Image 1 (spheres, rainbow, N blue to C red):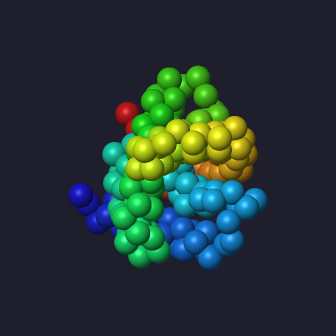
Image 2: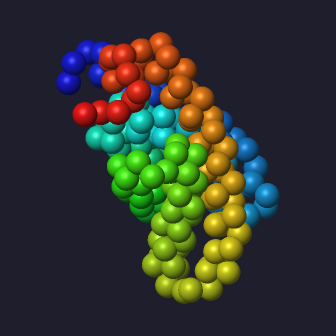
Length: 175
């Protein structure tokens, strides 16, 4: 890994961690347990488009693990991994199709993050009673994903205009 790539990934990880900390300071979003706006996902979506899926996945995994150990517990870490990995996988697949814009990819990621966490909750709690959250979590995931997607799109365009995408001039594609 070259120095520029290592530095870029380190800065993105630090920024995602700071956004996670800010989010941790907020009270429960709309009084739904575990619901947060997903500020760190601005960095993850931007990284997916600007540095590629491999580096974005690494940034996402390290952030989830650091946040889990710093601000949470084993259950929070498990829920974070379930939501983060499922949403990242879906976003990566949708991005590859070129059928969805950044906001669409992010909305799917927001919804899938909540679905992944809900699946983990069902497994950990050994009950399907938590599924009553499903409609709320889909709506909140879509709303958060839309906001994250819009902000990420602005970041991606700004980085592309400056030539700071994948270390070269370009549109953010990694070919």
